[in-house]
Amino acid sequence: MPLFRRKPPRLPLRMPRMDGSSWPDRRDVERRSFAALTLYQMGYREAFEPEAVTIADRLVEKVLPTFPIDCAPEDAPYLRQVFVSAAQIGAGIGIVDRGTAHPDERSIDLEVGRALWEAVSELPAMPPEQRRIARYLLAAGHYVARTGFETIPRMLASLADDDPSESPGNRG
Image (cartoon, rainbow, N blue to C red):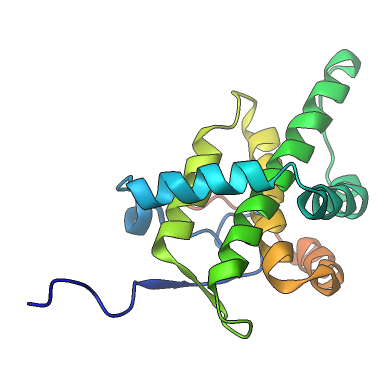
């Protein structure tokens, strides 16, 4: 048995979907690891850099209006900031991920999947529908950081195809 793996396990890089089906299966990434926590922390730091802020701003500007958001008027600014932060952190993780991935690679390292789930676990408590939107924006930030702004129109088109009533059983 070799001491070191030659290649770390890879997961597919999928366009985000509201139904959660694009997320790495929780069973594949449920074990916390030092590497995943480190990637999450590196992504969190990167989230405040101009590139991640630009990605988040563009996503919120283009994608957020497609979601019906039910909240009290006094909660709207706070909720919007949560959504922006989720997109920024996803973009930060994506920027870190992009730095280690081959440019044409359509997969992510298992530890990146764990880092994304770590970011989800840090989201504040909120109603399920708002949580789905925040989780979507987190995944979208990662995806756009990896694939570029030109994928946003395809993401918008796929949102129109998503059935909002779907809810995968093994997602969190």
